Length: 346
Image (cartoon, rainbow, N blue to C red; front, side):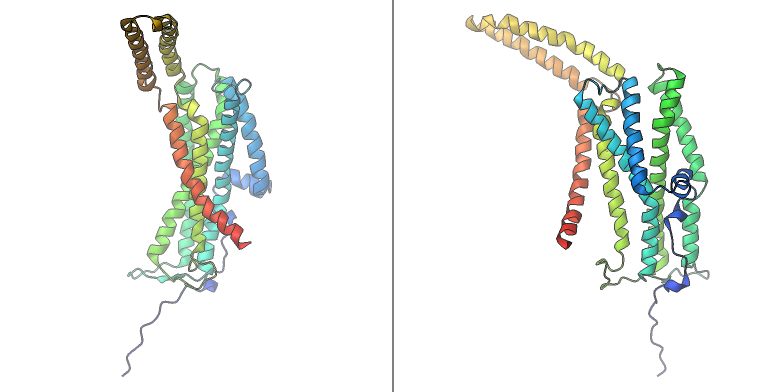
């Protein structure tokens, strides 16, 4: 019998697509990365160091002017500003590393031979080279800059007419350019690249047969480069947690805080006066003691009621800090196994 043996799908030949992906190919649509990496030739360490210093100077200057924090008189405010600088720098580090992670993820998958043949049942097959060109076209699209510009304009309107309408126009423009615009730019490009990375990895697994290599040296069947997604997730959770812990004080409405302070202060004064008045009644009759105790209890209940239920936009400070702790704990627990694995291999 001349029955043909079923053909085993062969992995993509590494030589069929000779161009090795580089991080530079993933930020050609990002003017800032082109400037600092290709024009100034700054490596990641210098980038991070310069950004951290600028972040500290910015946070300690503009937040002091806006009176959101008082680092000169409050050690806690100083700690919050340092945490905020570390959070901003963490976001910037993720922003710098994402092009490298994206290039290494796809290039390592190709080099390991885990990308098989096109598996969609259609007359027109898509080559891996076409897939990569489509990925780079999406990553470097100029539309992202247009979208970021529109988001920046929206935030500027909020900044000028809602957040800080009482400050001079020159000061708000300077603060927005140095602080908010850079943050919007970095965060938007992080979100764009993370979404594109996840979207095209999903598309890669959908379009091509994946040849898992059980004995591959990376210990993950040749799919070890997908671990970059895990590190990106941990880094973002860490940065977001620090930001929540640091800026919880700034999320409260200054007007709301002033109003609730004015409401609570008379109750505090009345409570202190009631304590002084009821102290001599301890040796008195039972009815006087009960009346004094009930008065103190009523003042306590009213104080807690106003403090806990008075609306302070958008979230109550304690809840914000609890949310930050909830976010940061999984990130720390995720880093711990990797650190133990690194130490045990040495």
